[in-house]
Every structure is written in C-alpha cells, then in structure tokens.
Length: 352
Image (cartoon, rainbow, N blue to C red; front, top):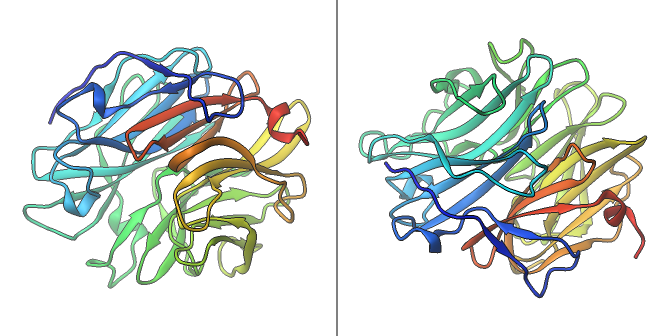
C-alpha cells in the first residue's frame, strides 16, 4: 500500500560484544506510517550483493492472519554490508490482502534468487494460507510476478490448516536440488523443494516432529539436517535424514537453550574452513541475548555460544559474505530495530 524511504541509521550499542558497526536497516520510528518491521531474511547474490528482506507491517505489528496490510520490502548492499541502498517494495497487495514471512534461496546454477512468502486475503478468505514466491535473475534488481505453489507443496486436506513457509532462507544441495521448510502446525514440519531449478515443486511425505519454524542444511555426506524451534521446552531439536526426507532421526539439543524462537543455520565454506554456524536466542524464558555457535563435526557437538547482542532480540538470519565474514540480520529492542552486523569468522571460532 505504500513505499517507504528513510535514511540509514547506524547504532553503536553498549551491550554489543564484538566491536563492529551495528546498522539498523529497518526502524519504524523513522516512518510514522509503519507500525513495525519484522521477520528478517538475508542472502548473498552470486555477484556478492547482499539482499535483506523484511515484513513492513503497516496498521499493526500483528502477524499475517491479523493484519490487513503487510508488505515485503528490501534493502541491498554492494560492499559487504558497509552501506545500504534505500528501501524498495517487492510485494504490495491492495488493502485487505497481506504478504508475510520472507525467505530466500539462491540457485547458483541459474543465478536465480527465489523469494518465498505467505499470502492471505483477509477480507475474502480469512485463515486460508497461500504459499507463493517471486524470483529474480538479475541479483535482485527486478522481480517476477508472484507464482502460487500452494497446490504443489500442500497435501490433500490441508486447505484450512495453519501452514506457512518458514522465514529466513532455504538451500541448494550439492546436486542442485532446492530445499526449504514448510510448517503445518497440525501435521508437522515438512521439507519441500525442486529438482528442476524451481520450475516445479515437491513436498516430502514424512514430517519432522517436534518442531515449529525450522531451517535445513545439507551435511557433507549428503544427509539433510533440520534444526527446529520447539515451543515450551527451553531448547532446540535437530532432525537428520539419510534418505532424502523419507525418514528422520530426531535429537534433543538440550545444550542449545532457546525460548521458542526462529533461528538460523548456515554451512560455511571459506579458506578451507568447513563448519556449521547457528544463531538463536540464548535464554529459556525470554527473547533476549542473541548468540552464535559453531560446529566442526557436522552438528554432533556445538561450541559454547558467543554473544552478539545482550539485549532484547528475536528472529535472525545469516549469510556468508564475499569477504569471508558472516552477516547476521536480526530483530532487536522489542521489535523496533532490525540490525545488520558483520562478524569475522576468526572471532566466531575463537575460544575467547
């Protein structure tokens, strides 16, 4: 319903632990017409540009089924996150229709970025979730018309279920398959994907459980690992499949405490380093203190957490930058700020 442009805000916050700039990319205090920005997603295009997507929630901060005007907006960086271009609107439906929960997958073979979101027509089909994407073949300069894949990645009987594509990002496997996570709160978390560069989409038969918002990565031997938010337990879960999602082995990750919040997982490769990175909230009861952990054994064991930000925080999304750093884009300060921060891999894996 609107387009918003505001100046770049740079924050130096006292409770930040690694000394580097914290850049507030989306802050509703800078625009009286926006209630809040929520649900961060970030990815690195094949040319190195950074693309940060987020919900622009206009009349209220409510989620998709409670807000009649949510748009998806974007900012881009051409210098590994040091500076950022103005806000651009990517998805904007008429009042009464909303789009929410952006997530992205990069297809390195075709150089295509897929940006997924969840759609609802609150005036005519309240509580009916539709699953859609747009794609860009020019590193985010332009985006296609929306494509609805609800019928391809939903099962019979799901029409009125509370279902949604997890915000953040999906992956491309070594053989070129695109993979992502879809949550059905009644029937579990399912992996969905494409074997033909996004022309058609499939959903796996067997769900992972327990789990809410989840992220998938591929391990070195081709197994799939899903790392999941689980509500009311105080820690996360992981699920591993060695048969492309036909069956899963689930594991309590009791050392990764979590209040029930969306996190992010990334397979990092740079200068002969091959490790897994995980960001989440390091608190069992409150959404505060965002941390990063790393694993050098494919997620069997995880390091002690390194604190990125000690204050109020929530959802996070991470990406590998062209310079070898890791970019994190996260919600902070009671959903008023959405911070980008560049982390050095040496700091992440150091024992200090």
